[in-house]
Structure formats: structure tokens, C-alpha cells
Image (tube, rainbow, N blue to C red; front, side):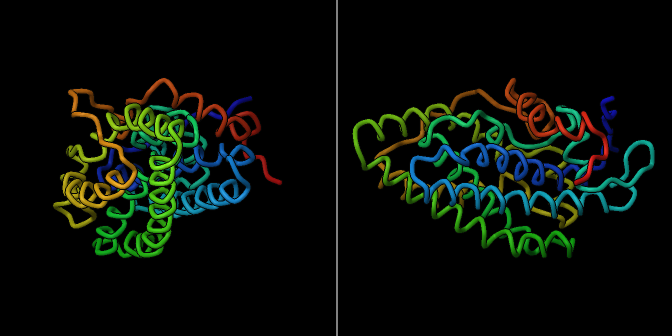
Length: 265
């Protein structure tokens, strides 16, 4: 017998925290898919360790989201823990950015995505370190150090691939063409962002664009790649409207808990 899905109150503070938590969780899941498949053993271990860092961040944020007073409760009034929030929500209840859920791709795709997200997360964590929410600020203080390493690791590989062989450079250009359109969502503000900014909970996403762009520019220059021209395309994962890939990620991630409710070992 499968466990029924849970539903949450539409509280803007909790939704703000869940957007970050879900992005870390799903990005962790995608990075973990490289375990046993990276081009060299050192990278196999490095990618797995970064996935664990992101999972730790997601756990802390999910636990905090579940403890945010009345807003942390389900519609039935039950306060939810990190496992329930990770394993018992349906696809439309997840709030991660679409960039995190795209399929694993090749190694160039993986390191470029990690660069784009780690740079964004690093700026996000730095701003959240001054949040009016003391618990969120404490989580951000630790996570910023991890994101800085993730960003540097990814930048080194992007430069190495872009300045490597014709094949590695071609794959990096293809990865850029595929990933870049999804970056617009990282900086799209809505009512949830406005509430966070007004209350002091966290920054509006649009405030992160300039620093993110400036930090990536020298990496792209050294790698010999350029971002594509902007397009009208917009993804909306953080509003619960996901790509066709999200359901497959959740099916794999949630299968055990859905099939064997409350299983422990």
C-alpha cells in the first residue's frame, strides 16, 4: 500500500525556504547519479561529496521549514519532518528551480550546471547569512563555505574542458546552449520573493543577478565560451510547474518510502 501524499499551507515564508531546500535536494540527487560514472576516480568522489553537502543543506532547510510554526504544518494540522517533506510531496508541491532537475547529461553538462547553480547558491547563502531568521542565517553561514568550494571545483573543470580538446570544447558549448535558457528562472521575482525581501527573511532573486554575472564572466572568458542571447523562454519550477524530467527523479527518490510507508533499518 502506498502512502498518501501530503499538502502544505500556501505560506510565503515556508515556500521561500522550500524553494532553496528543494533546489539543493534535487541538485544533490542529480549529482549523486555520477557516483560510479565520473571520468576519473577523484571526480567520482568529489561529485559524491558535493552531493552529500547539498543533501545536508536540504535536510537542514526542510527541517526548518517543517518547524516554522503553523506554516510548517500540513493541511491536516500535522507538523512535518524532513523525510515527510522530501518523500511525501507530489511533483507540483516541489519548488526547486528547473535547472536542478534536468537529466544528468555528460560530464561537461554536469560541471557547467554545477558552476551555474553553485555560483548562484553562494551568492544566495551570503545574503541569507544576514536573514532576520536566526536559524536560516546559521544554515547559510555553513552552506556558503561549501558552495564556495563547489563553485571553484566546477570553474576549474569548465576552464579545463573549454581550453582542452576540440571534443571537450564542443561538448561544453553544447552544454551551455542547453542550460543557459533555464538560468533566467534563477532571477525571476514573484510574491514569495517580495515577501521575503520585505520581511528581512532573504533577498529577492533579482538582486543576485549582477554578482552572479560578474563572477561567471572571467570563467567563461578563460574557457572560451559565451552565453547564448536571451530568449523569451521561461521555466517555472520554483512555482511548481516542472519539466517532464521531474517526475522520473521523484519516482526514483521516493519509491521506497511510498512503497513501504515508515520503513526503518
